[in-house]
Image (cartoon, rainbow, N blue to C red):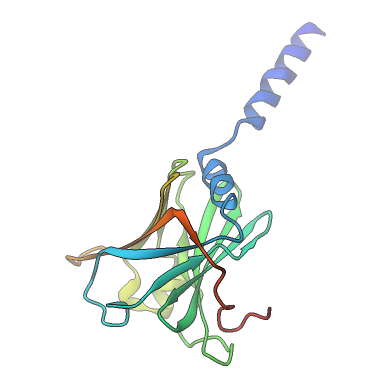
Length: 184
């Protein structure tokens, strides 16, 4: 009986241990409802972003899904969707038109290939992305998160540039308007 109790206790302790992905998830959920301004720290020469105010809003936090609209100036078409599935996190990009309909290029991204670290999650492009955007088949996105900075990053393997936008988590902003396709 004692051995059974010891084995049960040890197995319960192992299952109760928080994975790095879950630590990352829990840390991100602490920002639910908050908005932050960002700056491009590494650019890929995208005129759509240059000189525009960049805002992320951790708008929706459910047990296994977090939605983060990303506004570029007046453009409210982008939302990052993170899903926690089987101890791994998936990143998808939801793109909408001003009337709320899905853009032709939407729902691309990938799932972390492992549990990552508590402060970084890496998302290689999935098969759906490769079919939708063949040039993005070698994309790798990663998100870093600590007490001060949330960064969204993109590298297309085989290209020279990276894209990084960093958001200062110490300075929350007023809540922005809803992204395209959302109802208040």
